[in-house]
Image (cartoon, rainbow, N blue to C red):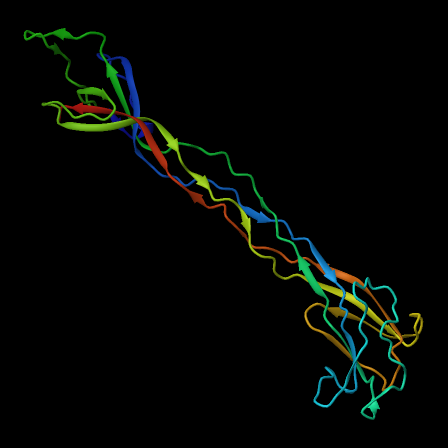
Length: 279
């Protein structure tokens, strides 16, 4: 007998012993893969060293004919108060006050690679891939026939009279209906490994302050400066730029897009047996 797995009958009374159970019509259910995710990257913010005054009274202070005067921070600056490259009050550039606006370069953000992880454990797989179940039932003994062969009873409804071979085999004469069934299945399915794309969306913000004196006590202006564009502010004409300081206010590490966790491979039937049946 062969048919839907849930419809398999018991062996009939004249062949009560179950001699074989196998399967056919292997389905290919995809492997259940866990979802991939990415931990946020590590991010750091570097303070800008490029501070510059301009003789232009309008931002961004780079019109033709204007003069830029460096108010740069020292190399490796940690944001502490510094009087490096101070510009004295009323300094002139081409007859105009050298300080009429101030531009601060955008801070730079450095990110590490994201670490992939499995976001949700995969569900417990249920391996029931066969579309057809086969059973072979054996009689206890057969009645001898006059020509020294064995006589077998007629197969009951739903069953066929067959001969059995392990492995793949050709069918003998008189047994024209051939079926191959399998005992086992080899699971060659897998999931592609999780990975992460490059980080995007990282940013940082600093609080930049500029002072008239050399000791960071006489505050001229204090503003938030983001990492997307340079910051520019108009100053009183000819004001002295005596010192500056900066602190990192916020760092946003951004995120990475995950990839992977896709099912690959197939199930492979194994341990075949051949049944040759009377058509």
